[in-house]
Length: 133
Image 1 (cartoon, rainbow, N blue to C red):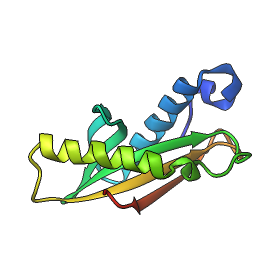
Image 2: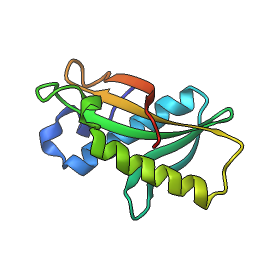
Image 3: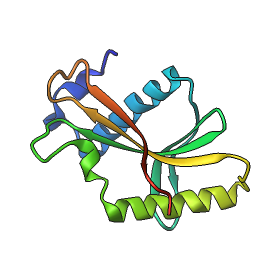
């Protein structure tokens, strides 16, 4: 996957832009895996879900974490209990708001890491990463 030149040097761009690029990469990854993207950056009073996607009869609520270095741990390790709780509350609101009941639901994490090769980031898709409480 060819990345924008901006992505090569994290210090030249804001954290938000860096995160947005990571979400673009995650979305491309999901589309290639035959997911249907339902929403990006879905917000409620509880928090935000980066990507909501459907695969067959399952809705995945996906948190995307992007890092340029593993100096502070792997990207997926940043999804702590508090973040999981906010995602869960937002996911429950989404399910209620859209009157969804005949589907399966899960919380995933997509980790995008550029430290080894910025041209080809390492992407990890962790399905059922935590329980929607």
